[in-house]
Length: 189
Image 1 (cartoon, helix red, strand yellow):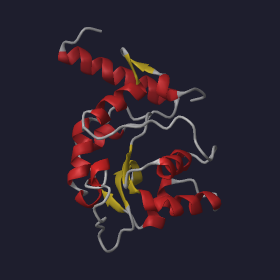
Image 2: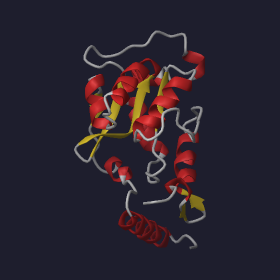
Image 3: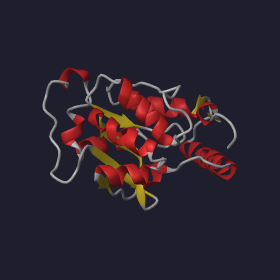
Image 4: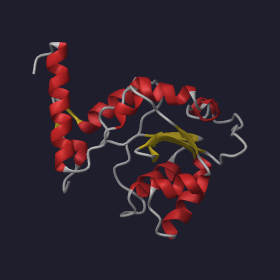
């Protein structure tokens, strides 16, 4: 879109503010990556930075340009990933990580036919992310494939929360959608 999407306002709150509110409501620690260790590698830049600098054993990744993601979706993911969710709190860092035999440390939601945000990765997957960056494969699809990650298919209403703002038309669509929702709920505009 040619500008910082995290600062775009949807009502009184920025897009980043919407996703931060949903994340904080889970009770998990929330951290925002503002500067990447390795710039210009698409989403893998922030993923690498987060994994390289965390003390937690697992991280739930959310995108600031997906402001419709709600706490309930995050909790739904955690219910379907007990092997990762127990690793997300700092207090449980000493517990051994359990993973299914075919996954090497990731759970992605199915978004537009492929792996997408939100997703959970174990800290130890940082080497795989680093390898992907060195191969110039900056896609989440490539990362999910390398990790042999679990993919969680979402049905309605969960899948409706995955709307991603990438182009000006998406921005117009999400603003219209939220205005209609506010009017239907009788909220002041």
